[in-house]
Image 1 (cartoon, rainbow, N blue to C red):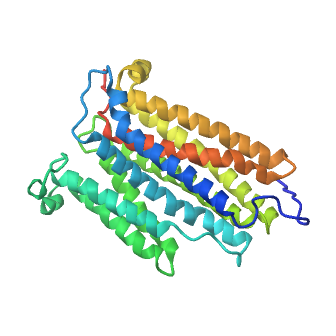
Image 2: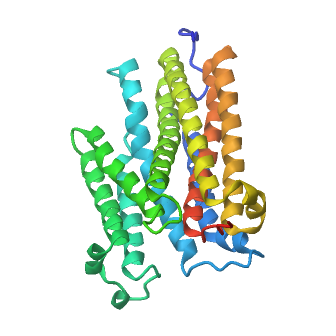
Image 3: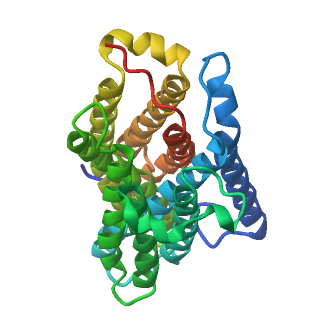
Length: 340
């Protein structure tokens, strides 16, 4: 694919450093997005469970919010490492946005620590220190996985501040594996190893997709005025990788859903169970994200200015934030009924 843009003449409006008004608009938009993302796991359980006859475990909204933060904390550093390498190859000496990896790791550490406290209290929301047995975490599988996630984010944060930030891929990979194993306990009604592999691929590809797009858009804010051709090339490289990531997310998501809900029961459970309703909402969001990604790709290829693809790409990353929040809610809801 050949991308051509104007390299002379005045920069388009908004290509330079953001004005105070533009920065305020971005701050308000970010606040709205974060608030909407937090409301999904906080208010979602009551809406999803309404009329289903199911009961949620105590503290479901809080657990869903913590796990959504954990997923978001995976997206940011993985995306920075993933797309940052392409950016450095295109413009080795160009400025890049200030990394958010350390902040994300701190958020992931706090979220995983909160989840570890829940596990240490017997999978209940602790009401005091007397309910928490942190020493007992090492005595069972779920507790060990919680400790892996806590330590994984701690090490990732330290590496993000080091001279080799790309090394944080290893502890973050450990977090992905631990989360996949947590979602498929040994007593699961299916082969837990297969389920864990599907979840690990689904989570890793989803994090690279969402986090990669976020970082690309941050880079484009710096580059579009001074190097529009390289900015468009970076977006094009990401778009090609994102197509493969979307395919992997869709394939693993559908396979995992069919393992939990056999084909003959899917339609009924999508309408009558909390898990199914939330899964359906997530599917609708992913479909909308895919449509926006296709729109951005068409603009990138056919528009006179390929960087107009940033408009649907910004909407895409906002919806991906809601997908992350819905994923956090999904992990906290009762599993669907396995009808035989």
